[in-house]
Length: 55
Image (cartoon, rainbow, N blue to C red; front, side):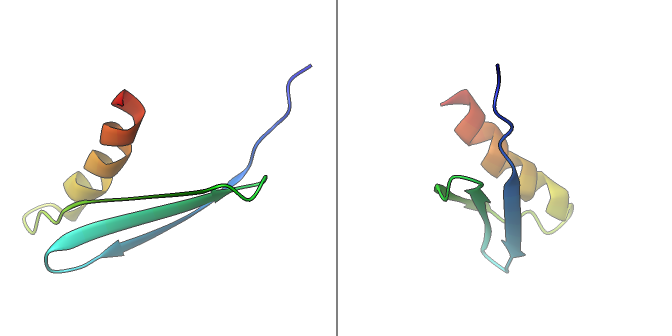
């Protein structure tokens, strides 16, 4: 039997860095940052998740 885990995610896109923090339903906190990409702000956001997933 599997247990569902829920996440709350926050993202702060600043002039230099994009910060992403997530908290899962067990209370574990995940946080990471990436360079902000002014021409397409979504790129910096996806880089944060991609870097953690591939680690």
